[in-house]
Image (cartoon, rainbow, N blue to C red; front, side, top):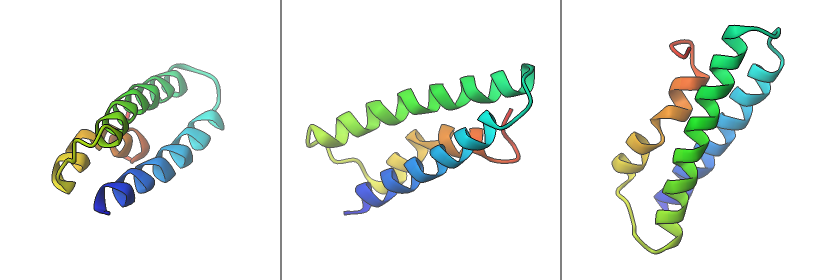
Length: 78
């Protein structure tokens, strides 16, 4: 199922980005990054609950809803 693969990849990238942010020196940039990732996690939880409830989402919709994970974890993040 495409939804599971997308959720799995988002989870993997979120964990990697969170680990990287935790290793940053304490300061504003680190806190902004962690806050962004925590917000993305909340959105991912909501998406996961939607999928678990049987409301299937198109892969493109999942990717858009989970974009925060990728935004926080990339070079374009905060």
